[in-house]
Length: 231
Image (cartoon, rainbow, N blue to C red; front, side, top):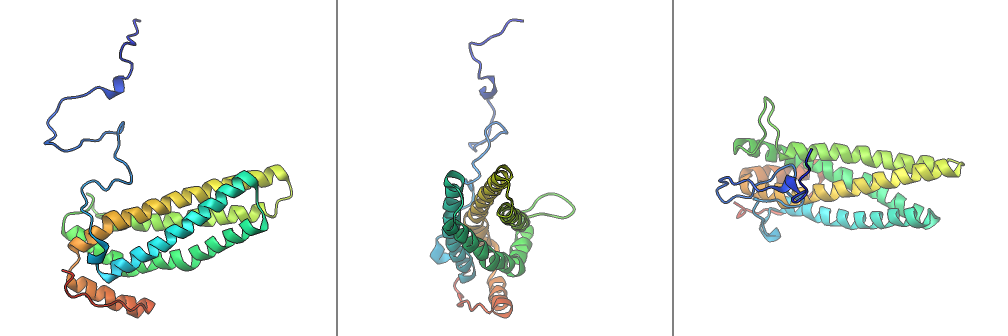
């Protein structure tokens, strides 16, 4: 068999086709996960207070994720000590008391309206049960709970193991799980801030936001200022 190695990068051959000027992606060259592509950004000041509230909570979460990541890397490189163990406890308490509550607020108050309006406007998957971006975000919430639970459990078990090799293996596994959790949460926050919330700004009605405001107060004792000029 004759091998032609003059142009070995045969996977990147150009194919001429009419794409109407639009960027074309393939499995060999997928779009960046952090690239919202066609979604138009919306200035923070123009968003409804409900969306601003969730974005503010995201900023706080990102700061905690950065601290958690730093701690995990220190443990991987230098080992565990009392201070790092304390910092881990701080993060997992934050996750339980803040991130989980944040997700519950979104799922109970915000996502149902986003889901309905995206279906109304054709922004959904094809199937007998249409899925929207809100569906994807709820799936993310479930995955983060599983990952956080596993990471915390592995860290706790490793502290009770006397065999050094086994303890090291469990801790390294916990660290990798924690780092994966951080990346998922960062991507999840990006998707909400840069893709889903701008779509909510576009599709939700003034009445929708009035109901969201009432439910935030009723379910979570959160007072949101009115914004009649939103739409």
